[in-house]
Length: 151
Image 1: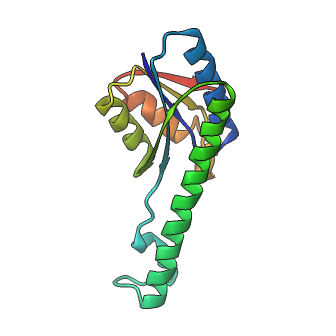
Image 2: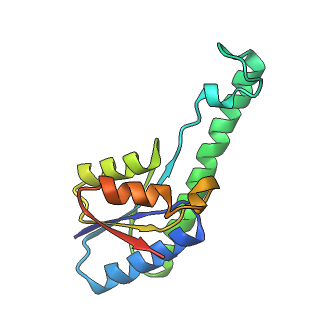
């Protein structure tokens, strides 16, 4: 059995990691992978001046720094999740991806022939807190494998 555990650094994803660890210990899980997907920030969405067209060099530099910061924060989320699994004596591979979260998770799960996706019910940011996480809802509907939503 191959398991994919999703993390975004939220309390909900922490619970998903803990539940995934329990399942991995209790079942014959041969491979556990922890994934974090951070969304690509487009330069258009970044432009603060609201103008259409190309950005000036100052905007380009700020945009580049924002992208670097975003990737570094994403790495930290993945490291924290990995430490949680290590504390439970679960060896797991880690995957850091950039893209639209639900699509990236389901594509990765399909390509890697994952048997189970484990994820939290609510996301870490913005409007995702208001709904059965829009990401978890989308993964449930898009995935071609079992999905465990942890509350």
